[in-house]
Length: 402
Ligand code: PHB
Image (tube, rainbow, N blue to C red; front, side, top):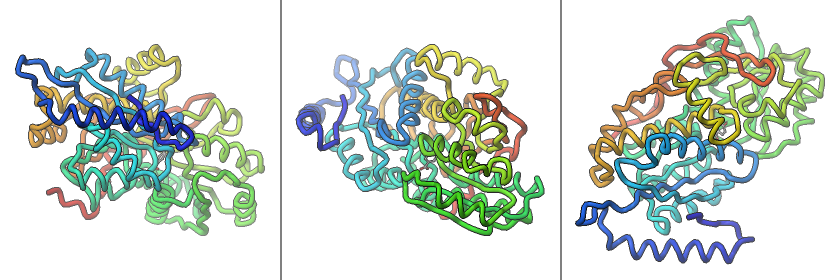
């Protein structure tokens, strides 16, 4: 079932909602367990960007989540699955409505989403208000596993601070003294550039200029002119998806690539290298994933993802896959009984497994504690260089788990 939200597809909207309303009516009389021992389907609500600058990210998360579950027989805790998908368009203004549609109309047992931090914020609010289980497979906004942390909210990806802080440390250790930071003007861009500045400052560097443009604009030229005039020792940029492709190309095109090294969190070059081509060669980034890791789990995952989709895995696919693994583990522990909430949450909290990125464990705030790798672009790969920071946990400021 797909819940349509675009006004252009009004007929399908109505159809989707009618179906949702029907299901809502039906499922309120259907207990999770049928008397004959058969169980109702588990409803997974995938709220992801299927269009726009983050579309490729959403697709990889969706495909890899299903891959993980299909590898284990296509069920969770013995229950077959209904996937309910909704395109959030990376639009924070529609976030709360969309999440409420999933919960009320879609009657989902879990919300899974999303990529854009602003939309994640809306999902967090709805999850808290309705006490719906939420797993965040990307968006790194700090408060989701900080001041707004909650037993029903989990994240399988990162906080914006984690890779950013590591890059600040690396850039300072490489002897750079000044930086310009540049990003989109929203939570992820702010938190990422702040994280970099923190690490960079701690290492003795100084951020001398902050440049922002509205999401998802890609009119970079005036800002690149400003970077050229400022002449910092390096530029730190947070962009992702289609915007990252354009930024890296424009940066090189402006002639800055050879004079002012460009660094960033790995999102700048993950899943984008084929499109970035020569412009990305040699770029250094930090992330909780890399090409050239030697974990058996990573090698198997990459082969399986390629076989299932025809595409190469990237960090977003890893987030989707690990979300699937976390669900498998949690629901196995309660045999598919989502009403056994305390046991479900307890099992998810304790879940430890081999992720393609390395060992997966969660902090008390439900965010991964993970190694951050330094990577360097060669060809179409973000090749592993070294561990920049081992076992990095987000500070989870303000998190008081109820
Ligand atoms: C975010 O909005 O938090 C975000 C989006 C795309 C990324 C990383 C973070 O690649």
